[in-house]
Image (cartoon, rainbow, N blue to C red; front, side, top):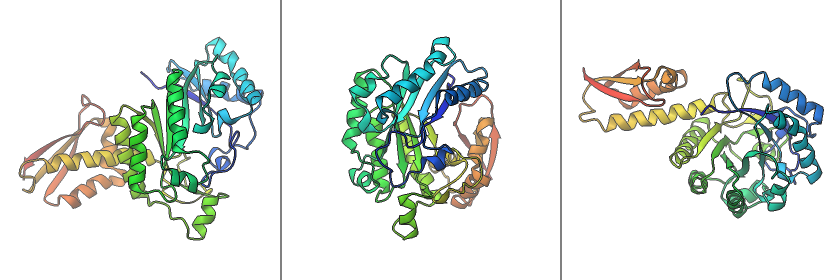
Length: 341
């Protein structure tokens, strides 16, 4: 099934009880911390409907804040603003992001009469020490309760996690993915921690109290988390923040890259190839390796600036590599054939 067109309505920091150490939603969304009025919502919907193309489904998402943490009258007003488009069939469903501690029966009652397709929970970590360090104000048990409540009420859940939070470790991040995958959300987002201006994290960074992950390490850890989610049937819908393709002046430090998700998927393909070559008989004898892939995924196989091919040659110096494309191959499938030298 084709992915729906999701119309984003940003509500930066709205409904948040305080500012987390890493957060500057205005910098990320380029939106002021003011709830959009009815006219603004209508204008965004009209604009995005022109992008629908052949996609059969359109959803509207409230992002960037803590939706169920808003005052009840604001939630009611925002939902009513979308109702005419639901009634006309221009929009089929609503989704939103919220903190786990605000997923309550009372909050869900406010949106029960609307077609809510997905509630994305800002989990960030399942390590309570890490959550406390970054001033999240909720615990891992809040996430478990939120997931159980949504499941009991028949509402699909998504999870959002972060890679590289202060005091987190690789084992902790992997454990977070494993715990959440076991809770069976529908979707997941994985965000590397970037040091943004005007945040507590920025002050820690400047004082030498926080060191962000290097890009390569962030990619490797995210690749492991991606694999954990996908093996559990969880669809990873984003890795990395959406950028314009250039350096964001609001980012002070951290594993920033305009195609972070591509780097992760390319790394996974590289690891798969290495595993297959090492399982070949007599893989230490000289020869040529033909790598067969669907044409759409040839760039992913090559890696950023041909990095995968360069790394393969470094790991297997006695082998030469050649890429072949075949349009009948499955997405992400890579077949390898070793020919004598």
